[in-house]
Image (cartoon, rainbow over all chains, first blue to last red; front, side, top):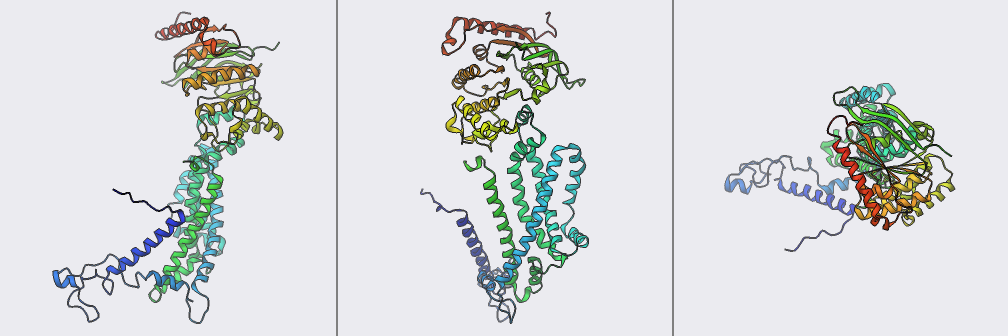
Length: 305
Length: 267
């Protein structure tokens, strides 16, 4: 038996490979569909309209009208190359601005809101975690409300924030912060409690202040936990910002663009797909930045094993 | 002439007092430790020897009785940073290099930058780890980690070194080598050592006095002076007197365990 050897690839290489595989899978699925997209190729009934040739399987063995779970036509699933092409065309007649420029600007705008929300939420989450770690009373009293806050749908919270703070980008950031702070609180709390009892006793034996114990022992121990939460929060804050833009009436971000292309889906499905790609790229960029920061800040065994 | 470094008088320690599962960890403990002594606490598991060490270090407060360290309360002595402590686990901070770990107490005590650096260097030389200053703890063997912990404990020249089974997790050969190193360090510094161990050999080899304890409740049942000549070295282990003292300690332990069965032994 010869062993199949994977070529040496770095993270970027694997990412490109998987994107390519997804694109191939997408197109292969489209090939399964008979013209029209509703039925599996070869199972269209014999007595069909003129523009739909009868399926060979249906005619030969009577396997007719096998429906695909998702329609494979160009409206439900536009070709990958059409999606890519549309990025480089102006979406509106009589305008020279291509979709790429519009999407980049919108992504950047939404990312800014997400980053501000992330910073607010991250600091709030960290402060709550520190407060809970130092006071069981605070933890028992407030933690249930923190948990409850996350069971209220964002769609219900967002309009409230807009009513309170007005429809500005700052409201959007606050809405993004709402999604961000929760994982940070929970993981900070767990991380601050992670040091061994002897590690704390050691600090006591030096008569260290609570402040020193927090910054020289508990926070460094908590950093891996906190960064795990920050990575979750980075992507969540982008989602929060996109959703927050809708009730805020913000026209410059991805939220409005997605809504817009959703409404005009029938005449240009590729444009919605292109905006979805950019929305996920935005979240990934943010995620990558935090991962990079983690590598710089958290010096741990992880680098060795 | 300075008085005793440690005075314990009638110390009792009861965990969960009043509860049905209360544990009488220490009972009527009287102990005096003079400057420069090397005292080992030995006894069966659960005899409260680690608790006794923690009472001296003010990491737990006794239920009753008095603990005076350097003529002060244990708490004041802790606040005055009179203690260096070494646990069974090295308890190094993973995110700090070896040098930064040794510096930790110096940082907390706000030593000057040059003082921090010169002391760290001197300590690492003392435990022969100068070449590893920039390494991280997880890059070192267990024995090396424990030497870093000792360097850290000594870096601010505490008057008492508290060691809770510091070599308990190491193999026999490493343990014997570190025993010798520890004695060297003890001779070079002016420290008084309180050392908890399970090992009779280790206790006899290191100590000037061995305190034998019994379990449930933890009491002191014997106080054995170790009159082996100083400085001790590899030959000490083959000294006839060494074996006699080992036997004495073993006997004392056996008696203390036998006396463990009835609730109260006639004193």
